[in-house]
Each structure stands twice: as C-alpha cells, then as structure tokens.
Length: 152
Image (cartoon, rainbow, N blue to C red):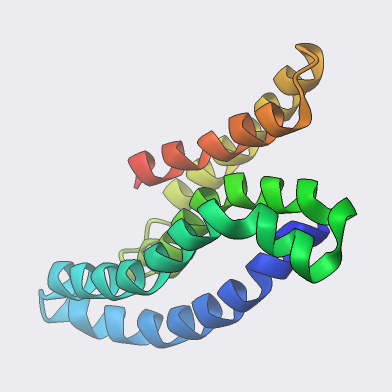
C-alpha cells in the first residue's frame, strides 16, 4: 500500500486538476458537437505525459526502491513495477470518466465502477484461494484495469 501511495499521490493531484478543468470544458464542447475531438486531444496529452514515466517505472522501480529506501524495500519496488501499467491507465481514464456527467449517463458510470470493484475483489479472492505468490497476485489484480478501459 505504501509503495502504491508513493507513486499514486502525484498522479492523483495532476489527474484531479485535469478533471476539474475538463468537466466544464467538456460540457461546452458537447453543446458545440466537438466533444470527441476534445477527448482525443486530452487522451493524447495525458498519454504522452504518463507512458514514458510508466515504462521507466516498470523497468527501474525495484532498483530505485532499493537505492532510495534500502534492501528491504526491493519487493515494494517490484510491486510498483507491476502496478505501473494499472496506475497509468487510471491516470488516463479518471479525467475522461467525467464524460458520464457530461452526457448525463451517471447510471452507466455506477454500473461500470461497481463491475470494476467486483472484478478486483474477485481477483483478490482468486489470488488468495489459489495461494498465488505475492507478485503473481499483484499482476492478476493489475490486469483487471484493462477491462475498465475496454468498457469505456
């Protein structure tokens, strides 16, 4: 949890700021029939911002955590490296998920969020029931983020 929070904190601050700016502009863009192009621009900008860091983190987190926090923290770095793709996808999707408010489909947003919660819960239960090693369980948990992207 600490490792995930260390990485997620700056992403949350930036993502919240982007979301706060995107919502009112998306409402105006929806009225002017240019919402799709605005979403594409936002997605491209966020992807160019997050993916280089996520790739770097994926490959360097274990060594980085070991150097910064000590040998005992290498496993946390390994966990972060496997959570990096999931966190990158969350960073991309969270601001764009405000579209449900823009197009007045909050009920659909609720269904998608509940589904993601259930999938993640099932991933954790399955990892426990199958007695998966820690890193395999993290990988299994992280994979469910892909379904969130596919559902949008």
